[in-house]
Image (cartoon, rainbow, N blue to C red; front, side):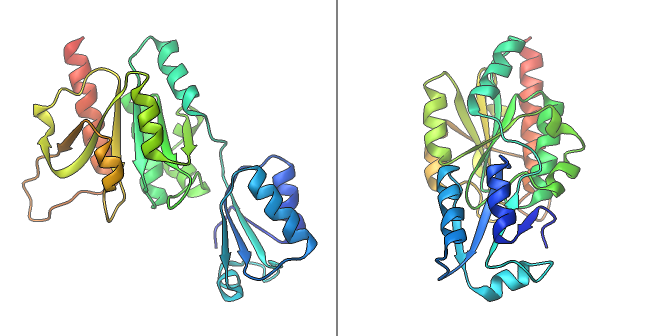
Length: 246
């Protein structure tokens, strides 16, 4: 059971009204009573996707057995806006360096990437609202405090966000084993580093919005790296090139 779960109709309504950030909302399919309608209105107001599921699914998720047909998953930290990340770069007088995650689902990967982002001087991390892990308690623990300093923004559409950032001067590189060896790419300037899903990698739509595709040289018998490890290696190649350029 997720330790950030909120169970029961009144508890979920109060969570919305108290301003808690809800990452995911599960509602029993077929329920249409007054409190459920209130929850659905709050979800729409806060742009939270509703997952309609069978009662058995909720029973399996519930720690109390009294979910009343609704379970919400709250974020452990508040999300930033993309503009906050750009503002942080401007305050430091540095070209923006943003890590964008295209569907990372493992909380330990997300926490480790936020930690790396902080240490590598990235100005923030962007994640999608759907089909990806949010800022859970496990993510917070794995980040080792980095969430207090590195803003994480949550957006509806990664590809569209990249298009908007391109208009502000950023260019994008994504990690893919079929790309150009990272040492042969110029990774300086305002940059967005895109890391894909643990299993399927970077989606085709997002990949089309990337200016370069970078591969990490690998000498072993297996052909892939953990998402957080790949993010760390490429982040520090960006750091190396920035330091070399001065």
